[in-house]
Amino acid sequence: MRLLLIGCTGFIGQELVPQLLRANHQLILVSRNFDKKSKQAFTNKKLSCLELDPTDKSNWQKGPLLEALTTVDGVVNLAGEPIAEKRWSSMHCQTIKDSRLKTTHELVHAMNNLKKPPHLLINASAIGFYGTSSEEIFTEESHNGDDFLGNLCKEWESKASQKPRSTRLVIFRIGIVLGPNGGALRKMLPIFKAGFGGPIGNGQQWMSWIHRNDICRMIEISLTNKSWSGVINAVAPKPVQMENFARTLGKTLNRPSLLPVPGPILKLLLGDGAKVVLEGQKVTSKRLEALKFTFTHPDLTKALVAATNPSSH
Image (cartoon, rainbow, N blue to C red; front, side, top):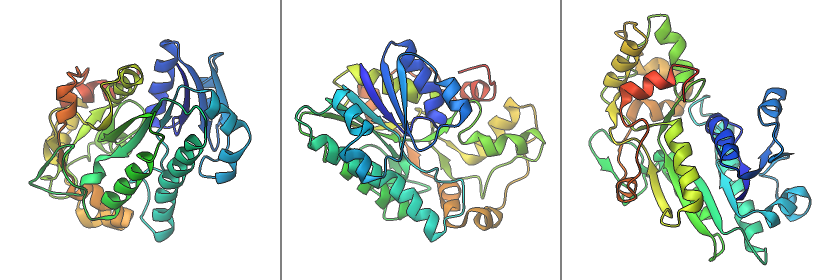
């Protein structure tokens, strides 16, 4: 297939792009800025790069981005500023929203104006859709939470669902992504390796996680399997509580994991963004079960072993 990839130069894209190239797909990669390392990593005759801003309306009205959209079979849209990287100032919250909502709105609007739109749109969302809870179990049928992320994800998905009638839509509500060289572990590993790691907050909050290899495989399968459509929770079958996660990570690294990271310190660093880490949610997937998806990493211990070994996937 010929695919337009937006927001695929980040952590998931590092594995997804080479995987899709190995499967002989032709890729057009869109990013606001490609550093030298990215350009070298993505050098391939089956791949071309467009360096432009996908939130800018004018890029979707004429020029190389619109031309690319008219030639592709499908679009994979993973665009979005990282959520738990910085303090949630009002300016940063606006950036988080714009990177998702503007990109998706302009993409879908441009698709609706084409005589022959792409027949597939794979759009990211997040388990933040459900809000946070220490007791409730969320499935694809659960309602959205009434907080910043819950409302953002609801609006994000709503914009994606305005795609052309002939376009199959797959929305992945992605959990906490584990994998080598980045993702949720990027900030945790140095602390744990130094022997100072431990649960964040009270340790009772749920973590619904997925290994990067599994979300990439889901995306690849959904390109050609038409039974993959609508909303799918991209999470491993066994969510864990933070205390268990910290203990398993410590064991994997052969380091103690005794010292809890106090919630107030995290709130100081991340502001409202700390809520994502301190409160959590227990998310499972009825859809993946029905689709009989086989996980490469269904178990946290094996997933962490793979994620902390840079040569592994």
